[in-house]
Every structure is written in structure tokens, then in C-alpha cells.
Length: 75
Image (cartoon, rainbow, N blue to C red; front, side):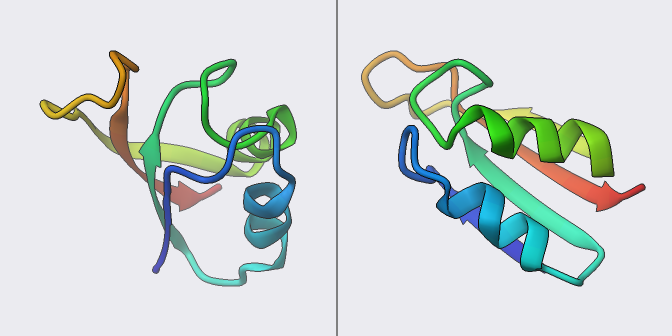
């Protein structure tokens, strides 16, 4: 399983990592699309090639962001 925790904002690292990953599960902790984590390519990759299996809002919030823990499986 791959875990991406609060990937850097506007950085291609998360999208590149997701494209290179060959496993079947991804745990993502962070802000929603358009927020302060990852870039738009990452969220496009998620919606195109992965489906959410479990989602939990985080009770501890950083700077008021709507951080969530989401477990995805490959489509």
C-alpha cells in the first residue's frame, strides 16, 4: 500500500508517485482538490484510475483545512 500524507502543494511529486505506483491501494491524507495539498494532476489521476473505498474526516485540522483520510483502490 502507498501512503501519501499531506503531499506538497502545487508540487508534481504526488501525481508522479501515483503514476509510478503498481500496487492496488492508496491511503491519502490531506486537503481536497483545490486545497493546500498536491496539484490538480494528482486529483485527476485519483478520479480517473482509483475509486474511494473508505473516507474519514480528520478531527485534528491544520490551519482549518478540511483534511480527510481516504483509502482508494485501483479501478
